[in-house]
Length: 600
Image (cartoon, rainbow, N blue to C red; front, side):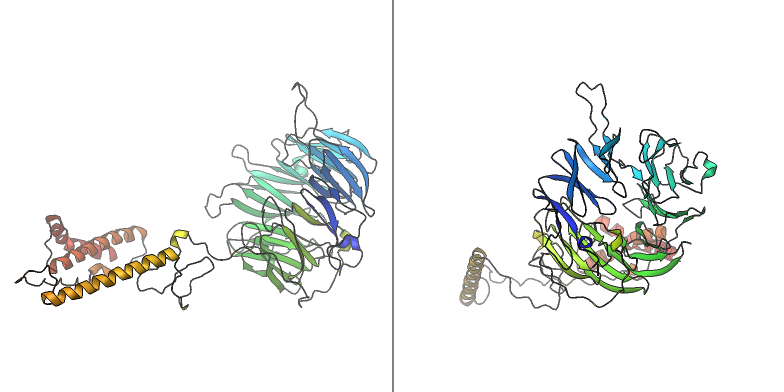
């Protein structure tokens, strides 16, 4: 259990209009044992440092910062247009991004990306960053290097001195870069998209040896790539590249085309080969950095564990999944479906290759492991979903431990604590839990109002659906439909009128000798119409060949022969055919000959 300290059990929740607050986790749900009483007011966004020791949020045109363990406010910064904030890994530095605007006379631009030294409580520098896309600067985990991307250049600074550019990499059309989250030995990846038909490429360098292209430790070039996402392992010795193209020309996926590549500092660059066609939905490193997971393929997708040689070493089933998430300890993996597919997840013991449990978590828009790796937090947040807002905490055996419904929830997060990830023995025995009280969405198939109560074709079982909660069940004995008062009244009137007509008909038969009074004496009874004979067409016994061109012609001829067979049946029943119908029957022999040639 995560019993090393109460701070490891806590997550923060903020919502409008109340603001932001802390609450205790397992063993102490619903309480707040911290000294942080929360902030009341409209909060735009918030962020924790990677070690969980500092916490900042934007409200009322200011950025507020508090520090653990007392969670006392250590400062506030005035930024009326602040939209985004982020900490460096240790929380020593804070970056604030504001909306990009000009002065009143439109003659001078204002820097909108500010970086502060939180420990020294002083500003370091302000930069121009017009786009909110990829606005975040990057630090190494030891906070020695600070880097940011500008047009065709990537600038590197000593994190404590942002006035002087320490290193500069100039690459035409460079779209993105990724700085390794390392200590001491640092690496950087540069990505350049395809330009004028040339292939896109990625270069991996050791910092700062990137002056010459020949110094690259690993290279990879490829076509059909617009963007890449980089996933470094914990030791920063290898990186997974998930590439994406906006359009899949093969037509297999609406979401474009994805590929997965593996690069390491030893110079290896490998495309990860998967056993099922389709996109790469999700990837995740194990904390050891020696193995990684991938969820891929058309639905039902597969989940596979790969080693550093990109060889598949274990399979974790298949199903409606698009997410994989390894817990901080590295002994349990979550494989599930969220977002645009049914929210359901499975927990697997990685070493035993055994499923621990599975459950549904409907309407979830966010999920994350607790720092101790034994609990999962799922949340339904606005504006993604505006109903059933709230959060739930699950044990790794897929048992619900706690839930709380909130009218409007914007986010829910654990407080980070890297020291809480202690090894524990995995048990497959479910713990004691609770039943969810939140109302789940209906799982029944939607039926158009105009089709409710409609009968199927004659001779088929009655699968009438009167309400959305009813499903097809031919063995079900359905009672008479419930009629409204008005419909019941009309039904009675129709039955009374029918009965009256029948009585009048019987009386008329008695007076006129049994037939209708309109019949005249000496009139012969009508000749009964001969029943139509069944249509026996020569084409009915012909099967398709499998050749698309031939099959198309065969289907057309069979259609004409069936029509001729019907006309011949009508003629035998005494119907007089017109000229064009007689001509159509005359073509039967030629059509049969053509059909025989096609099936040879």
